Length: 193
Image (cartoon, rainbow, N blue to C red; front, side, top):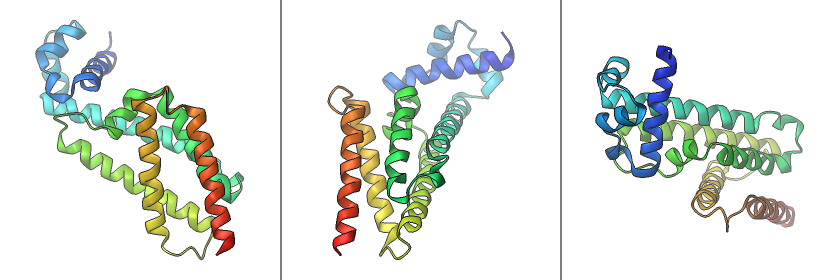
C-alpha cells in the first residue's frame, strides 16, 4: 500500500471509531489494531493523535465543502424562489451519500478537538453567506437578510439532524415536501405583505 493509501486507511479507521464512539475512543493502539498496522506508523504519518484528528477533520471538512458546493452549483439557472429548495435537495442527497462525514459536523462527537469547532464555524459562515446572497437575489429589498439567513440555516440544520438521527420518520421525501411547502408559505406571506 502506498503511503497515501495507508494514510487514508488510518483516517478511515479513525473516522469509523469517532463516528460511533467519539474522539476519546480513537486511541493510537485501537486505531493501529483495527488498521492492522504498527502504532508507530500513526506517529510517522501524523505526528501525534492530535495531528491525526486535525487531518481527519480537515479531510471531512473538505469533503463536506465539496458536496455543498456541488449541491448549490447551477442555482443561477433555477428560479429565484426555488433555489433554497433545490439547494436543500442537494445537501440532503449528500448527507445520505456520506452520512459519517455530515454526522461529524451536525453532531460533533464527544471529545472533539477545538479544530472541529473552528472548521464548523468557518463552514457555517460560508452557508450563511450563501443564504444571504440567494435571499437578496430573489428579494433585493428583503428586511434583515442576515437574520433570515440565520433562521433558515438553523431550520435546515435541524432537518438534517432529524434525518440522520431518525431516517425512517424524517424521510427524504417528507423533508423535501416540508421544505417545498415552507418555501411556498414564505412566498405567499411575502406576497401578502
